[in-house]
Amino acid sequence: MPGLGTIVNVIAIAAAGIIGCLAGERIAPRFQDTLMKATAIAVLFLGLGGTMAQMLTFKHGSFSTHGTMMLIGSLAIGGLIGEWLRIEDRFADFGEWLKKKTGNANDQEFIEAFVTASLTVCIGAMAIVGSIEDGILGDHSILFAKAILDFVIVLVMAASMGRGCGFAAVPVGILQRMVTLFSELLKPLMTTAVMNNISYIGSVLIFCVGINLLWGNKIRVANLLPALLIGAVWVVF
Image (cartoon, rainbow, N blue to C red; front, side, top):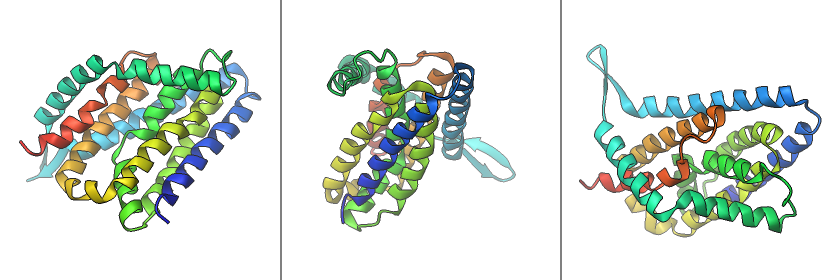
């Protein structure tokens, strides 16, 4: 059944949000603060690990870096596009709309929780590759694995940040469903080089999310999302 992987992923995120909120209500603020910092550190290292895996190669007994010009160019150009489109503001506006429609108007941390969790679980090659495999081959294994990872991440986030985290299921469902629907068109374009660039930049953006979790909103990560597209197009050049 095409789309089953996304359905399971969405359910996992929503369930994690509910369980995390219920647990968070019973946890003292100092424990919530520790959970937040633990989540931030985990996200930082997830991003760092993915970045190093793409950036470093081991040849002739030493490490060397590659793709640095692509990374710099993609982030710079993508960041300019994102600022022009005001993606982060539109993300926040959507979060504000969700907050009102779901009866959470009094939750002051809803939008931050929603945006942070959404960026964490939407960015990355697993969402793209998994959705394409789901649509073309009916292979849900990648998205099932992603669902488990997202469940753990959102569970911990929701316990410290609140119910907005669970609503990250909405953009995940929209993004992955769209990729699955257009999977036949996208698959020929998703070469190994393209996916490597997407994974490379996506890992850097996840690292940036970890920075924001640990030190506050220092980086407008949503405005850097076009860098993923620039990285994919970079392969042509």
